[in-house]
Image 1 (cartoon, rainbow, N blue to C red):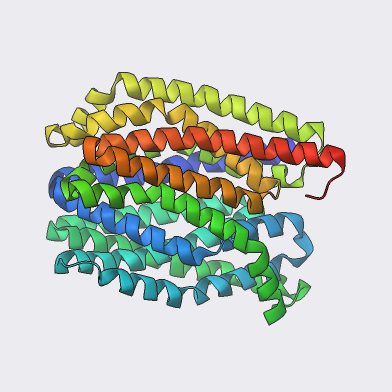
Image 2: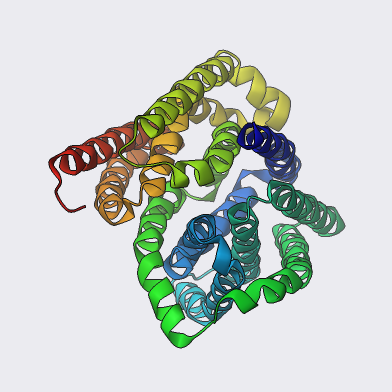
Length: 417
């Protein structure tokens, strides 16, 4: 009963914060896109996609690894959390170098400036993500919800204030950076006393840092590959079709992305319990099956609703100037149940500790996604990118299921993992 009560409480807090986050992001898109126009809005989305990809090279799996370590080792929570925070801070330098190198590939000065500002916002976002991962590892879903909700409000407020003060993409970028940066600073200051209080249970040493990085690295590579295949489509669309097509496709994708609040809420709450479950036990398989069926049902309902009303959604939210967003949104809508299910199966793989093998699956998904984008985007623009996303998500489900089944077969035979 205690675990059931905690689970219900976790779902409640996630159900409050996740919709708030998605709603705030969607509000910014819905207000910024018509005001800026497809081209300027595409520039903003391109900067976010590129810096997100660069951040993936330096994240190193620290956030997910910390959540898992905290779930497994409650007696050393303080040292684990402090160590992860220090590693997160140390990654700022290599990330800044990557952003600097990317500036050399751009010729438009205004795009460069936006990229620098959004680059700072992206790093601040990774800090907040890490703090949320710590709260989740403590199973403090209320604290995580408060942190994420505060970030959503602060970022949206700053972004809209900058947008309406300057009526420019640079104003939108600066406002975004100020909002999320302030949240990251306040979050560290508020949570650090808790880390320090618990740190006496374990020491933070160079050896501990190396061990933590060794364990987190497969998660980091998995996260990087996932980030690349989720965000590379924007870069490819811009290369072949320009900023205006990026703006139209990104607007559709943001509407699609808003529906991911459902699997994000359910799987974030279920993750610590999945980690603690016995990998070979029937209870884990039953829980995984129930979660998959639940998300498939939710995805079918949401995806069907979006597909039926795609044109009306685009017209009502974005206006006639974004009519080109309808075609990619229709494709993405039919992919919603598939994406819900892939969200679940990917979480199962990480909870079972199969991230090293998961790297191979994600590498194949990246090759598939980039290859399909390179073939489809020159012909279909953003709609081609949407089709690439749908097919890749379906293939990811197959890869995860095969990975789990293969591990189960080897465990039954007594083979080493």
